[in-house]
Image (cartoon, rainbow, N blue to C red):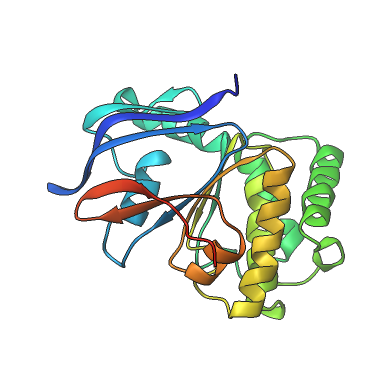
Length: 227
């Protein structure tokens, strides 16, 4: 039986006091790739934030990579996030340092101390996303697609059990979106679990996977029709 990475039972998602999503039941197994779709404001980002502990879970039962979300304390959140890789729409790279130093900053912040091990890890993740030769460049010297590849590399640094990608192609043109998607596909094929919020239906048709839709405060599975 594949290991269960995410398990939610009758979960409600609140933003402050406002109920955003209700009665969520979901099981994501190791190696799955799941899309979360829905209109802007339908709750995709709030759902993702609940999974990585940014929004507290007030109702229902939820487990993400063996962390109980209902009992998650402030001090537990950094440990949860070490088991996750999070990719944002706007890259979130530090502009005042090159790519290698961006990645080294994350490793140091998550407890790495051995310089040689850090260097080889940085080289390994940049190679995985096709950016091995770009480590000395600053974020502003890279295209949007290259910055997003680096953001994916950063998400891989601590060998996460789950990658949460929140609109990772939202700021990219269609061709670059496909290139970034190919990187995510490859990572998934190597056994990583990915949950990706997106409104890019062309990508979903090109790379079909299980698809959940946020609509009317519910999340439900939609079956992709073959094109």
